Image 1 (cartoon, rainbow, N blue to C red):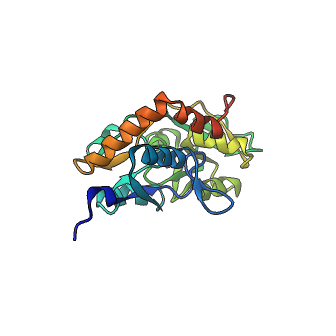
Image 2 (image 1 turned 120 degrees about the vertical axis):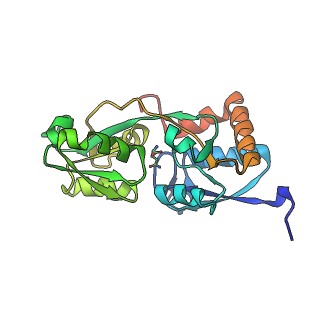
Length: 232
Ligand code: GLN
């Protein structure tokens, strides 16, 4: 028996750990800009959802195979992804940057990566960027499923550097995660909420309507400011 549309509980895929957008607090609850924004939008637009912390690549694949209704995971709106997914209005500008272990003084730029290993996260813009310059600068890519594994590999001295989104790396460095930023961020794509192409248009419309309301009433800025301060 079909449930009424209002009774639907949307399944939303997300990353395992991508602070300040999605991460677990001390009680294991998922918090962060994406999580609070979605919560506020769902309240504003009166829909129900369930968060599935699958990991970034797995969440994107789950969306492609219609196992989830949407993905919110600091997901960049790229031309390639637009072939498969419909995106909401952009809500956060991003780009990729390189980081090394805090006490590393040898690696100051891409040219210092020759013969080294570089940690990246599968299926991300950071991965694509690293791949696009790896032969030019002569480094090897080591893929990981989530950002914390990737950072650990750099801290352990196995990989010389990693590439990740700058709002995430900047937040991590500020939290003293043992890394430091090296390069300036690339001009990257903005984040959007994604649904499968041509599917769940109702959810996408609600998301956009809720986001516009949150922008207008200052709620979105309040959520962002809670996690990212001006110097950030
Ligand atoms: N913004 C990046 C992308 O979309 C990374 C997202 C993530 O790792 N959660 O590829």
